[in-house]
Image 1: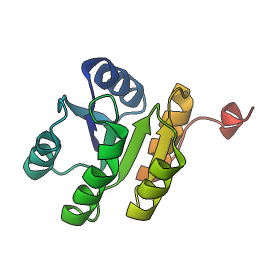
Image 2: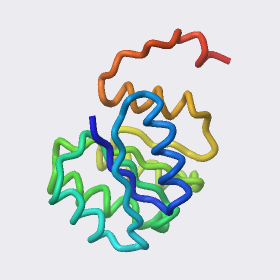
Image 3: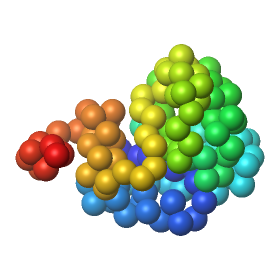
Length: 132
């Protein structure tokens, strides 16, 4: 499984560590507000999952970028991660059909569980660790 993460370096490093722990290859880019950087990466390789964050894109740019990805790569699985939790943003992303919307902060186990669910990967961890 291969995942593309588009974020600033610190988040790229975080997602690489978290997903590597569950056996997923991560390719990272630092798009610096340029949606073309994400689209160029998608043209070069096939990814099982794309993780977009608002560390490199303002929250308002995430829906149009997600829609563009879904239009050009309809099989693409997308997780949007943001610290901004506005209802309009969540609704816009839901209409586009992204696979998950996660707000910061979250636990490592939560991110791993969401990625496993979206990619259809069986967990070797008891589900009880996710219960509060």
